[in-house]
Image 1: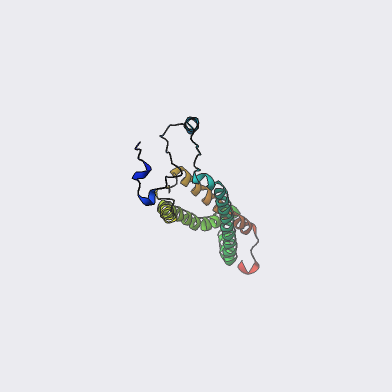
Image 2: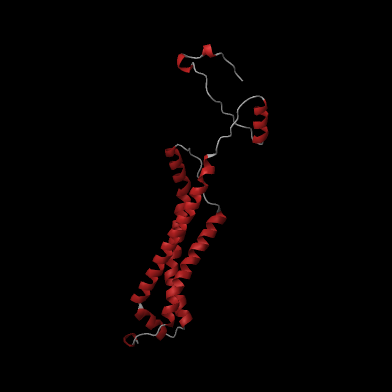
Amino acid sequence: MLSLGVDSLAAKDAVPPQFYALVLRSGADPAQVRARLQGQGLEVTQAVNPADRLAVIRVIIVALVAVLALIGLASLLTASALGLRDHVFDLAVLKAMGLTPRQVMATLVTATGLPAAVGVVAGAAAGAFLARGLIDLEGRGSGVGAGIGRAPTPGMLAATLVIAIGAALLVALIPARRAARAQMPVTAR
């Protein structure tokens, strides 16, 4: 510790600081250090970690992601239903070829599921590649600092891909099941 008299400070620095900051070594117990310093007559307050205040924001972000997922699944359901309506003659051809309702349903789910799977994989790859850089860029711009961004773990990324593709296939199954069991109009036969 370096101790200097107040008279050695420049005129603009003549007022001594009102507080000092202390950074603990790793492994030090904050409660013990605080008690020890307070025992010496110092007033000690613990700084609030800015990340602790983000707990509420995390809940909001999870809720927004859930809402966006529902909107995406509703859009996929609508697109699948409209696509099947536009291809009613294709369904008649598939049934005329001798495909069972289960095979027709599998064909329709595959036709919807493959583009969805390609989109999910491409989006997840681009997101995983860009996420860290974008978070660090925002951190630098907002004053929080760079180095806070982390790429998702491979397990988390794989779980997200499986859930997204599975949800897309389940949503595609709803209109496909209805279309496979539907009777073809006379004009389609």
